[in-house]
Image (tube, rainbow, N blue to C red):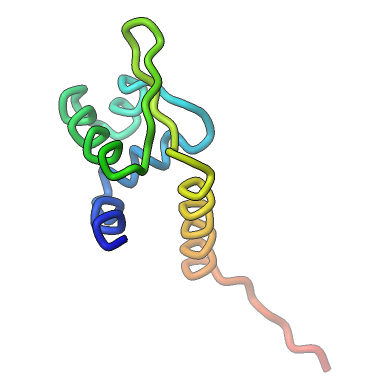
Length: 96
């Protein structure tokens, strides 16, 4: 578990995983969104795939990445929601 969090603790790798949460994305699309070269994005994605955080599907010459399973998707969605809550807490009103 610590290894998974270590990998996700890197902003670049986290950006790549978050980039494919909504739908499978091509390596070129993920690299462009993260501001990375294709080789560097591929390297990070290989580490994430080896750790079981993402899976790859090939369609012709393109490789599309997606979260490995719904657990990963839910974990990252929950963490994102929690971070948003901590950064932008709603003002709670006291009821008389």
